[in-house]
Image (tube, rainbow, N blue to C red; front, top):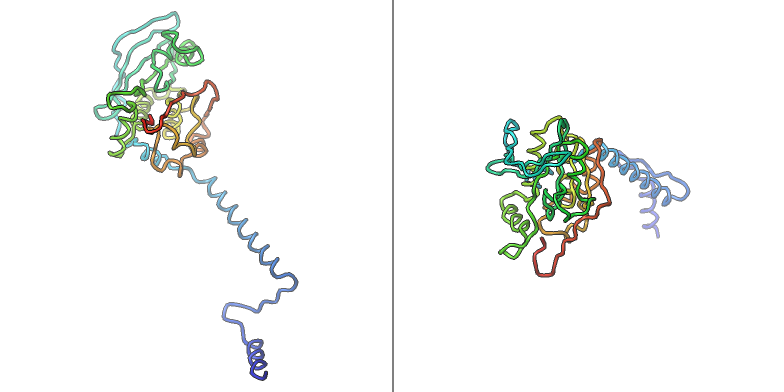
Length: 296
């Protein structure tokens, strides 16, 4: 008993450690500790949210993971008009091509109304041809003929052609077939096609008023506007942006590390304060992915 009392007396009379003081709280000490922890954590959350508001996603990093890394041909290189393919009361349609990067050219149509001074880039889905969205035939409903609508409204319309999803002799889609070797080289099919779009942006300069894409073209329009702030307006249909279901989409949409930094909310932040419209209609393409077969 004497030993216990001696020990208690020694502990109770001991001096506090350097840099500390004796705890003299009264009342419910446990609740006070929890309140202090809550206040600390709430402060840290507020600081993090404020920092995120100031931080902008890295355009250069998005370009890198999409494979938009090769230097494009100088904008002084002009569009090459190959032929006149159609004419209506509202506009003339030319087949064109333009240098993009290296030995890669973009190809497509130019819908040219008389005296047009402003331009828009319209990107079709991979399963749509420039001729179809220009209204050359009745294969597509009017709601998909966006190039014709813009041209009828007096704008120059440039429509690049995309690699299609047709199955080739390799038993996978043409898009997946090109995606696979590009991935091994640190490039991407998405990046190749964005480069063709941005090569048009280089040439159009201040006359460009916007970019409009549907389906696969909507994805390219969204990424292009996020990467390049010279695009004043982006309209996207048939594509709702990258999200957690990306793994269920065609293989050629797979981009390593994309969702870590560049989900739809981040892409919207990169485009703001420029105008971005994501339309619910018309609906996007239905791409059938069969088990044990090509995902493209």
